[in-house]
Image 1 (tube, rainbow, N blue to C red):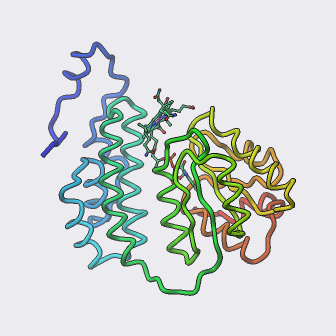
Image 2: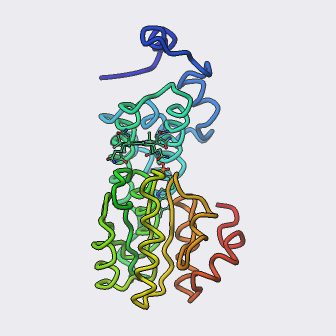
Image 3: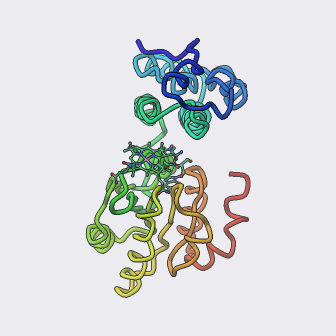
Length: 260
Ligand code: B12
């Protein structure tokens, strides 16, 4: 099985004539970033070291001692955040990101099954990644959080044409919708979608998310609200359910997501 443990990355970089910007190995990064709780750390390491064959048994073992949502957030997602940092530092490259994401998804699928369910739905939410955007890892994490908070999530997937998104909103009448964009070339889908929805008299909050989007951008067009991290979304969703409109969510955003 592929393993990076003990690999000397300086030799790999020399081979491709690349200069190493930081000298942090995955092991050192793990020591800095991963949770101190032994059970969460073990789960996070499965993602960090891309152990897609063993992540299943490790998550199943963790589920005997920890709650499934905590395993997702503090284990699987924490591991993925460490992977994203290693990518940003040019220690990991795209193949590692893809394998780590696959490993995380195997773990999430197992943990998600044990999230208490069967409750009455709190409302329908439509989630999608913007037209032209293939990045859906963050959206998938957020979808798990929203679903496990009791909402009926319609996940339209990635690279969703604007017309399809609008048609789905008209058909399903969600309490709010979210869009993810990791590329500066795709984030403009959100103001376009918001404008069309408004013209049709549909005033639901449209949450703009993903690495390309910031709060200022999401607040720059009518209907737009921001959510930076997946765990903030259920908090915002709860307020929407209580009747807050997009303007009030914007005004009270800091208070609503406080601590997440
Ligand atoms: C993985 C990856 C890919 C994968 C995507 C696989 C997949 N299924 O998602 C693949 C290989 C397909 C890919 C392709 C491309 N990619 Co790419 N990719 C990445 C990478 C390395 C990681 C993204 C990621 O998944 N991070 C981990 C997740 C967990 O983070 P996240 O998505 O940001 O999600 C978090 C938050 O944003 C938020 N969030 C996200 N969605 C949502 C939704 C809700 C509701 C909420 C509340 C929160 C939320 O919560 C999450 C954590 O809490 C980034 C670099 C980076 N460091 O971000 C580049 C990056 C996004 N890619 C980039 C580019 C340019 C491309 C390509 C165009 C490259 C190319 N030349 O071919 C192509 C796209 C071609 C196309 N149009 O089809 C650029 C975008 C630059 C820009 N500003 O426009 C980046 C930033 C790399 C770079 N530095 O240049 N990529």
